Image 1: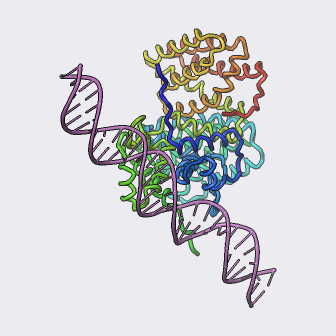
Image 2: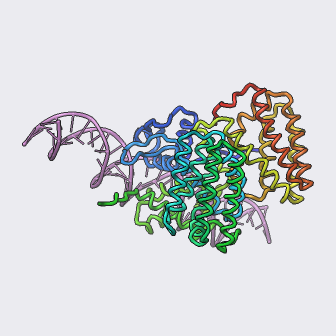
Image 3: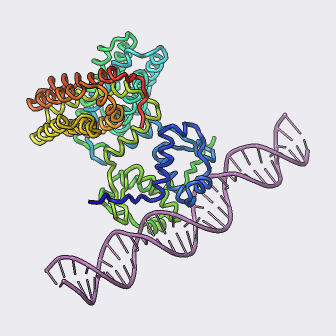
Length: 240
Length: 240
DNA sequence: AAAGACGGACTGTCGGACAATAGGGCAAAT
DNA sequence: ATTTGCCCTATTGTCCGACAGTCCGTCTTT
């Protein structure tokens, strides 16, 4: 008979109010927020309450403080931030390696195909450099896995699709820790990755979408093979 | 010669400490957090500081308060929460409709194919009911678009892949507002959606992955057509 | 002009306070 | 025996006020 009466704490109301202003672009990226005390006066709440609201927005990546600055500025959430939120969710939902891998099998080949169609010269240069950096990175170097991730990221950038980039980044973050183990364990992994990267780059260079898709597909499939060889069960939940 | 000294505010340290305990499963879902005052004593900080930390975790969906409860409990981020974070990011990055649509074209057909392979009886029933609900929903009903979203969501559930579900949900949230406009503007939209849903359900029922993929592909492609007919430019940035 | 001193504006943190309320226990009422 | 009413305690939401640290612009000194 009655609707539940809405009873949100003030800090929620304040943060929603600011959030709304940001999402509706009344506050634009780079704008400096008013000082906490002024916000408190405008909202007629105490400064502590404003601070609680700001912490929420800060965590969402909607406001940020440039290093060594005093006031907060409006910002848009970095891909890495969103991805890390997604990673937390996936970890806590005990998502297993195959699930992530399956998602990669869906997304990465298409991203490669898009990249092949849309890449420019700068993309090619970046990809080539990254691939060479991986090839030359010493055996057992813990940064190798970051270079692999960078390759995927640059390919995403070349695809010119922010949405897919965001989704990809989460997957990469989830995979990184175990991928590092895998590369160190499986002797032939480095060579296979280097080879796959080369072929993908060639396909992208030639704007050959089908070829790019095909090789990326093989590349991702290879990851799973690597895990099997390394004796990592596909059902291992991903972890921090 | 020297590394930059790390200077994180106390509220960050506190929230990271708790976050770490949650991600490492030392605190499990459903556990009640200690009271704010006790946390403050343990961390040797003021209660306000603890509260700022809690606001961060609350916003990340790592802790939550069941409606009408006093203490906070550890929780895992709901898909909707993560998706809404992603949606904010996409809105602020001025991602256009085509970008979202392109991502759908990548993800949805494969999800449909997976669903065809893995669905059980309950999935079929749910999908059928949802499709009927859409067919019977009155012209111009603002909830129609929610029913369409529900259909996609249930298909995601049937695919048994949490990762893809999470990614899908963000897309759906981004599209919903403009989709509502489109359905109301384009006369033949409802019929075409109903038809596509029927064919997808049939393919899923028959465990025919290729057919499911094909029809979902058509279905999503149709959305774009609908937007064109409705005179909505593909480059329109998605909005709140 | 470069280097240092000064003051204002904010933030990070703290101590303390108080009203509101969830939850438990216990007694009265049906 | 279950419901209702009442009291008490633990805990949250919010407020007040305070102070040190620090960024930044200005003013002085060399």
